Image (cartoon, rainbow, N blue to C red; front, side):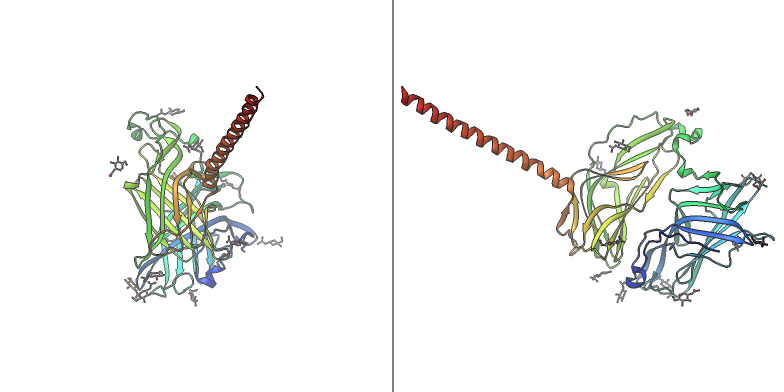
Length: 419
Ligand SMILES: *[C@@H]1O[C@H](CO)[C@@H](O)[C@H](O)[C@H]1NC(C)=O
Ligand SMILES: *[C@@H]1O[C@H](CO)[C@@H](O)[C@H](O)[C@H]1NC(C)=O
Ligand SMILES: *[C@@H]1O[C@H](CO)[C@@H](O)[C@H](O)[C@H]1NC(C)=O
Ligand SMILES: *[C@@H]1O[C@H](CO)[C@@H](O)[C@H](O)[C@H]1NC(C)=O
Ligand SMILES: *[C@@H]1O[C@H](CO)[C@@H](O)[C@H](O)[C@H]1NC(C)=O
Ligand SMILES: *[C@@H]1O[C@H](CO)[C@@H](O)[C@H](O)[C@H]1NC(C)=O
Ligand SMILES: *[C@@H]1O[C@H](CO)[C@@H](O)[C@H](O)[C@H]1NC(C)=O
Ligand SMILES: *[C@@H]1O[C@H](CO)[C@@H](O)[C@H](O)[C@H]1NC(C)=O
Ligand SMILES: *[C@@H]1O[C@H](CO)[C@@H](O)[C@H](O)[C@H]1NC(C)=O
Ligand SMILES: *[C@@H]1O[C@H](CO)[C@@H](O)[C@H](O)[C@H]1NC(C)=O
Ligand SMILES: *[C@@H]1O[C@H](CO)[C@@H](O)[C@H](O)[C@H]1NC(C)=O
Ligand SMILES: *[C@@H]1O[C@H](CO)[C@@H](O)[C@H](O)[C@H]1NC(C)=O
């Protein structure tokens, strides 16, 4: 009844350290009745869940583990019931997707998330032991009948106090064969903007085509994240430049825009856990950048694993939103900060990259609210090498000239003596 994919990534530290990893695994779930499959889903999902503790609220990130199985409540529907896919995972947690269809389209009619606050490994310090069930009918997954719904881009669904983020989704309900249909309904986030329909006229009343000009070097901002008890647990100072490719309403085509983040209009927030730390930068209501750092407790090294951006700029036909949670940038060692003065480009996907300048971050092991010694990036070390090499070359040149002069003087002395 259920199959799970082999590349399950470790959430072992869950049990041992009570820590949180957001490394996602691809999960395959199938609902069958008799000999035929009616729902098949291959997807990654993670849950951001906020719950109460005695000292206030906490937010945890819980991935849908590769060990998730299809629950017996799942059904292919019929007799007035809807097809329902229920994935069970961990200690009494569940994700349910119920489907509906008409002659042309099928969609996820409702999403249910159930989580068990008694699971202290996942919800440390929860002040309740309830099993919480939350439900929403705005899921936004729609496909044509007899096609596979595909959405590689990340998309989030808000349900109660939780957010479910899906990525790498291929899924079909009301299947007519045992395999996913080769015919696909691709979600809008995956569609290249060049094939997007022209924007509705109401949004084209914007100012005439502004030709994007390079914005120059951005200013450096200083950001920090504090624990619930007010202790600074993450520090960053950096100058950031967003490079986004999007469909421009005023120009009626896809454009590449490079925009500096303005530190004096940007606020920071986030959270710190023993092995993961999040920094969220928000500039007004238009730009929102999240950085996720994780700590490997085996190697005692950290790195930037996840970057996500939501941008709602005036010239966009729809808010731009993308994320990548399998990055490997800004690698530093525990107890030290990471520094890179040189410009670095953090590529997130084909439509978004982030340029960083004058960067220093420390997501773990802050003492007394200050940066500790820095691990310098290779680029800076190379840049440092240039003056050294040039200096050495100049010194060599001076030496050669000096020797030549001395030899020349000796020769001319000898010359005078022979006269
Ligand atoms: C399932 O398949 C087996 C053998 O392939 C067949 O004997 C059985 O009748 C089938 N059951 C149904 C409900 O189709
Ligand atoms: C919560 O508060 C209690 C008492 O006020 C304190 O002992 C405990 O350490 C706090 N827990 C956290 C996680 O801050
Ligand atoms: C848990 O804490 C929240 C606020 O921190 C409070 O509103 C709620 O009543 C508490 N629940 C229990 C079961 O103590
Ligand atoms: C919730 O978790 C507790 C402790 O981990 C477990 O004993 C209980 O059976 C779980 N509840 C459900 C509904 O699975
Ligand atoms: C959501 O779907 C489930 C399963 O089909 C159903 O039991 C539940 O009543 C649905 N909820 C709503 C609000 O439609
Ligand atoms: C099917 O449902 C969609 C939206 O739910 C609607 O736009 C469409 O007109 C419906 N088609 C038919 C044939 O009822
Ligand atoms: C979907 O496929 C089934 C079986 O192949 C067929 O009977 C049905 O008409 C198809 N529906 C659409 C909308 O193409
Ligand atoms: C604040 O909390 C952190 C962990 O959450 C702890 O390491 C630190 O000692 C606490 N500081 C104070 C002043 O309570
Ligand atoms: C922005 O991204 C595009 C495509 O990746 C690249 O060609 C361009 O050089 C980038 N611009 C800057 C200023 O980084
Ligand atoms: C946008 O461009 C497309 C093709 O390039 C054209 O068909 C359409 O009319 C244009 N729309 C506007 C509002 O200019
Ligand atoms: C932010 O800084 C820019 C340049 O550094 C300045 O032009 C602008 O007035 C500042 N805005 C605010 C709200 O302080
Ligand atoms: C942590 O580091 C060790 C040693 O470098 C490595 O073998 C392991 O795969 C890393 N774990 C993760 C989750 O990256």
